[in-house]
Length: 319
Image (cartoon, rainbow, N blue to C red; front, side, top):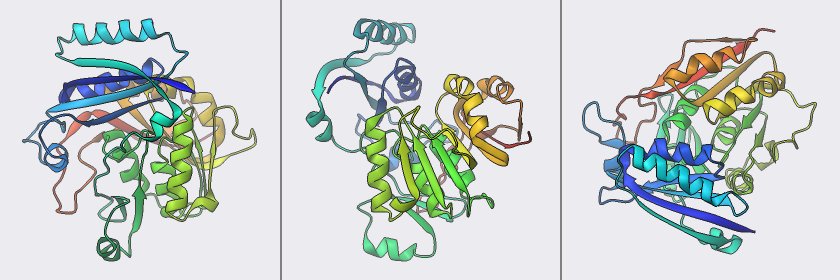
């Protein structure tokens, strides 16, 4: 199978918005990385007061199935870059399946959630560091080419809440749009008895299976392409960290999959989109939207600066 790869280097504070545009245009994944001189620690954990957490210059690497309307994708990206007055460097080429496997992995930073109840670590964490965290749930992650390294605010919003859920132990969990499997696997490590992941990206399903095996929870993890999830499958917890429009379009399915009294966790939406998403789920009693306020904490107890653009919704199915 062949893939269209588009690389965009641009000022870091535009990166989130433009990567979301790529996903809206049908990209199977859009990876963010540092394209400047600042180190990962400096870029992610030490912003100035009130600044958004960004790299000074970021790189987006997005992938589409080669059958995509390439001209349409290019026109839309060009329009976005032009309209925002962004100085960006754009390149495109085609890759084979073997080329994809040789690409470097996304960075994973050591992060803590719910005051240390759950930790996210890269797979190359030292034995000594793992021993120090022996009493906590520890997820050792390699996202591969799938979304979900833990650095995005929407992922952090979900992990922070899941690490506080008293209803998670013993629950069955659906992670719709599972990416690297970070949320489903976090749920299993926090006591869920089973987790199903759904994603349209084959690379995501591969990454989720691989991470499940590496973390010793493969027995509780299943993955499915959309449409393959068994019709009878129901869950005590459903989480979807995608985008606002897909959350609205999938409202009937996600609501149907959730058992009465179960918990729905939605992310990938902006504050101004929350009302429209809530209206799409009339059978869910939602709490007020929760903004991203630096849920992830580094090992040195440095807290991320506030970024209120992204919010999380959580609610209970009442009928």
